[in-house]
Length: 104
Image (cartoon, rainbow, N blue to C red; front, side, top):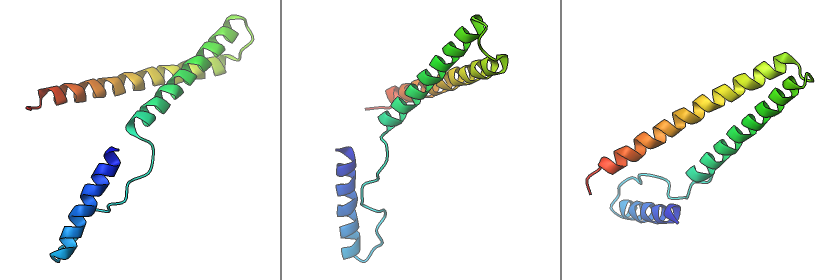
C-alpha cells in the first residue's frame, strides 16, 4: 500500500514536471523485492538455522560422533551469528530511539 501511494505521488509529480517542461525526478514504477520485514524475517530464520546446526554439532561432539573441525566451525559460525544479531538489534534500537526524539 505504501509503495502504491509513493508511486502515485511520483507519477503525479512527474506528470506536472513534464507539463511545465521540467525533468522527472524519479521512476514512478513501484520497486520490486522483499520488504524490510521480509528481510528481517529471513535474517532471523537463517540465524536460527545456524543455531540449530551448532546444537547438532555440539551434541554429536558430546557423543563422540563428530569431527572436531566441524564442531569448531559450527561454534564459530554461531558466535558470528550472535554478534551480527546483536549488532542489528543495537542499530534497530538506536533508530527507534532517534524516531522517538523527532518532534511531532
